[in-house]
Amino acid sequence: MSSPEPIKFTDGAAYERFMAPWSRSAGTLFLDWLAPRPGLAWADIGAGNGAFTELLLAKSAPSSVSAIDPSDAQIATARQKFAAKPVELSIGDAMALPYDSNRFDAAVMALVLFFVPDARKGASEMVRVTKPGGMVASYTWDIMRGGTPTQPLWEELDALGVPAARPPSADISRFEMLKALWADLGLREIETRELVVERTFTDFDDYWLSMVVSSPSGVVGKLSEAQAAELKGRLRARLPASVSGAITVHASATAIKGRKAA
Ligand SMILES: C[S@@+](CC[C@H](N)C(=O)[O-])C[C@H]1O[C@@H](n2cnc3c(N)ncnc32)[C@H](O)[C@@H]1O
Image 1 (cartoon, helix red, strand yellow):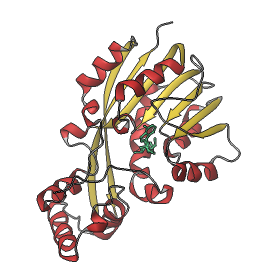
Image 2: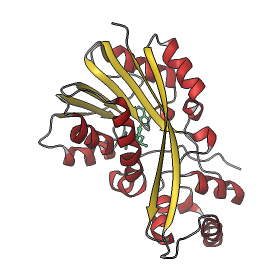
Image 3: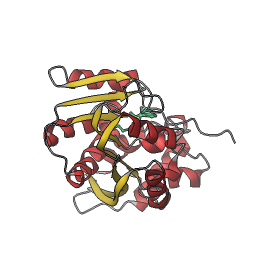
């Protein structure tokens, strides 16, 4: 069996349907927990189509946000949102940030660190660009304990023998790994938090469109008709609908924050 294609985010509008509502729910809990003061200069790394950046603007009154992502399609969608806002958008990689050292009051990755091929390098770049005393924080889906919203889809694809790709650094979603990394990078005042969210879909078709058709793994689009029908049947059976037909899916994330030594 050939290995699944790596996950790529190449469509800002599809991301809006697929993951942005999840990002907003979990991102709100994350930001409430970070409790930043207003007026900070932020680096939002792996900003994608700007779903978390919008939260930063709405809830944290930043002085500026520098948002970066390797996907030009995601950044193009973000550009439309932030035309008149204090947001600097760039295309680039978390493992080699195009920013001076000690520039930002806070550096964050929202649902990103597990996609960075070398998570340690990505986190160390966040530390480098943060001012002494500044905050370095991240959250990812709790993949290793089945917390990603895509877990039902992944498990049913596994059962069909056509596994979807997992993020390359899924292991960093473990609290022990996160705490060890943050400590190893010399961060202080390290705290972690579990973020638990849910999303209700109007009906099964709403779920299918969001989680399957828009899924960045691409694997579902390549299924035969029979395989797609079987996948639908399996997902319908494991995701019970309410009387109105609505389907609620749960997810959980692992978050970490720390401060660069002053
Ligand atoms: C799940 S999305 C999160 C987007 C946004 N932060 C949010 O909360 O909605 C993951 C993002 O990580 C980006 N990404 C993947 N590899 C990356 C890397 N090496 N450096 C920076 N961003 C990366 C992807 O392009 C994608 O936009």
